Image (cartoon, rainbow, N blue to C red; front, side):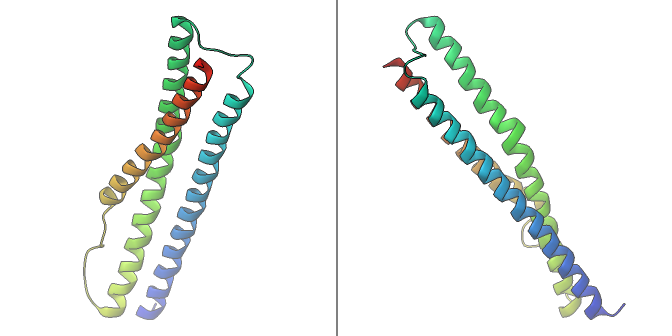
Length: 144
């Protein structure tokens, strides 16, 4: 296989990884929006049926908030972001390999998998924070 064909193959593989990354990111966005919408809908519909008046109600609500936020982070955001980080890093690596074949250089990839994962950790904390804020607002709304 010629260098040109090899580079084209690597670019196609890299593009396939980027497409998988984009699909995963879109799925994550849609599920986060659905979760946040569900929280808001529960809050708007539960005003008449639920209320936080006793310490037991507050503790139960706090437990639910903790389960939802930690579940959202550890069972949804973290696995998806690790998948996106792998796809992103591999795509960058494949594109860099293709560039190295064309230019006859041997540079390392610009961003490592760990650097990409660190970026996603920050984003996951932000998204979990939004979930937490919505749930706290729901609690305040129910307590009134």
